[in-house]
Length: 311
Length: 294
View 1 (cartoon, rainbow over the protein chains, first blue to last red):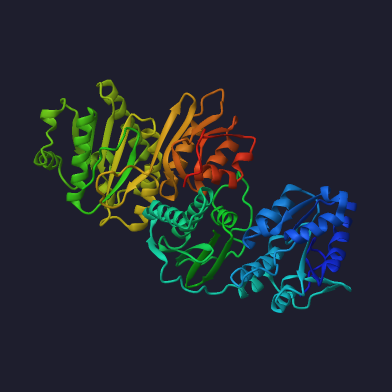
View 2 (tube, chains in turn blue, green):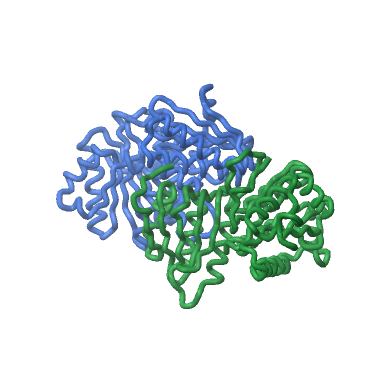
């Protein structure tokens, strides 16, 4: 399936093999946007950001440049805090972005969330006037990841030009393929069955856990806020009770909430909520902002959400 | 065993008990603390007749007739107080509670302590579906700091979902028997100069409806001409996303905005994350000299 011409949103993947191909695929794309007066943002890993900045020269000042390894460390927050944040900051205007969420250092734990993110961009931006170009390094990335890029992008661009991807599929279908069961928490995990009265206990456990792991005060606060929101979601949507698990891996803290609810909206936690909006929808958004990775497995049997914070 | 010594005027606490004896113990401690503070105490009893409550107090060596003034401790039928016309009418009940507060002041008491066995709601009287909403609304009365309320619910008798909704309408719930040192998780106080609200403790889902009702009262009763609503958060150790969103929305719907005062730790962090601190309608002051402490 390819996009219909009516959709003002376009989402090409750029397949590149080296720095020259990278610059040939990105810099003219940026300059074209500047020439027609579109706001342009570039969120790519630091080394590639430096390449683009140098190539743009004085024009670099006209482009919002962000290190994706920081802004998009957690792929779950790229749509709300990088892509939609930029589009919403330029209301009524067509925007142009380069987003490179997948780099060679992405771990096997991170990758399913990255692929879901790429698929869900199509759902989050459907009908919006925007172009988002996603570079993929075909030399360094796992070939399977490149195959996936054909499923998450309606259009592909390589050194020879652009073409429609025959493998492109519905965002929800592609995202669902990465809705994968998570391995059990390790035996040394601290666990607690939660109810509405457990919230202060949950926060104290999270704080103590983060202190033992040597996190600085602000990151301790971040873990406490994230665990509290995950627990609150379980109380509100997950049948009022669930199971919390907290543990530390080599280089990260992990907290997990498992409950009997079903998370039906794949865009949950990815759409910014206006400050004056009634109702909820901010919990998962906040967890995405605060944490370095969020993995979700949801089915009719229940939902497990696992949030990671690097030490 | 529960100690009420840390309750203050302005508190509104939900206490979950296991059976009648546990409930009577909570009532007895509330009466004892009220006598010690010189406050008036009104006990609303349901399953235990008033005479038997007085006997229970006496058995615990709590003797209102000897220790207190005449009329300082009143034990009345909860059914008659809560269902005067056979049905539960929150507005009428609130009015009657306000009268009790006024009367206590006129009679020279520093405060009024209300402790009620809520078992009357189990007989499904008409209007009882408004109970959780009433428990949220009645925070308007307590947050002025002239009265405190202790609502006793038997966890064995009430439905679990209803109890969760009821407890979230209180700033604090004592859910399990605890030893000394228990204090309410959240305290809500109205302030008059500057006009606003003071939140002390931790604000989360378990007090969400109480905070929402308190904020509504602030908007409804805003003085004229409007001045920024002052929200004193210096004593607030934690706020969840829903609380932060509620305060942000308050800023956007009041003509002069809000002043969020004394923010620190996770409270400052979450307001930052939700974009509240960048809004023109929000004046934001961090607590001086505080570090981020979880």
